[in-house]
Length: 456
Image (cartoon, rainbow, N blue to C red; front, side, top):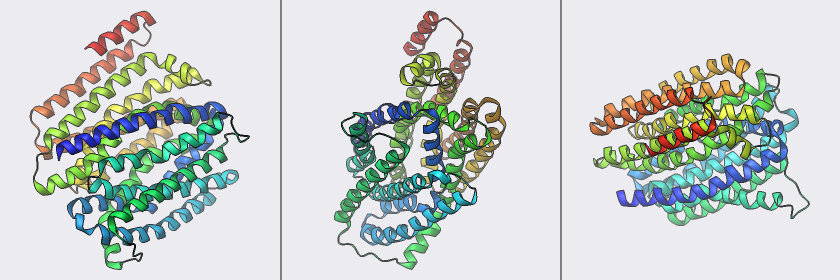
């Protein structure tokens, strides 16, 4: 089992490294450079707003399904079509909530058509995640890995054709949204066909007892997702609304966030694979500590190297990747990239705590983190703009990481591994303080210092 999981992680990592790096640092970056920070900020605000109400699309069904099918594989055929029918109904509810919220707050009236396209794309993505939950629960890890990058691969092809100038069409917010709609829809269709081959002929109907059981079991996950989406997405919406140049600041924040997003894919992949493993291991009594410790140590080390590199070379990275607002983007990146360290701990530890069924703990932590994020953004964004949002994000993720790490170690009763991770985090903190104080050092000395860190 461990060999299968390790092979799945390696395969997923390689695929995501190639495809999502090309997407985030190639296509998506090219689109932002082409349409500018302000227009891209408008798109990013629309996208973030559409993500706030994802709870209505899933209500925790995917998380419930992953754990349930991992522990009861024979129930795939029964669950698949009943829950799929339920998710169709929930998709309509989600789109209705999205439109009503947008109209009620008088937001995005001129971009309503784009918001609808992004909402439908989210509906397709939610279905794809549900189909993938069956694959990962049954440990079809390589197939799951292929679907994890399928929509981005299609977007790379579609956007690449337009960016190449081979057609008379050009990239705009509307075209970008249409391409996401198309690629998400095609991926969802193929993932559904694969699931049907595993489960047999479709029998679409809503089993009231099963739906009620899934919704009740998934309700804590739904509340957790709501809290998570609010404290990870409201910063962009707040930024666009409370400061005069909000859209431009969102563009700067999105540019800096892009590098963190590219690197965080490794953590997301590992978490998606580890969650069903944790669920099954808790049922069978298999040892969790060795793989848990290995994943966190590996991701923490890589996160630290990337963060230090961005701290010292952010001006050169920003100048190389972007063409607008280089100074502000660089300053924001130097702060924002440090989210990657607490993010690793909170995501992997969160997956383990979720598998244990301790969702109430995660909700409480998430609510406190959301309050920190909300008040921090309201206080810092008017003063510092995108950099203020980055500082708030670090405080939010840092709080979550410390609390979740404590409870994970308490449940797992770590010994050597826990001491190793605590030493690693302490070393990271020391280097952060040293590195932060050295940002004014001349470049040649800074380069030598970075080399020393990497060798160490």
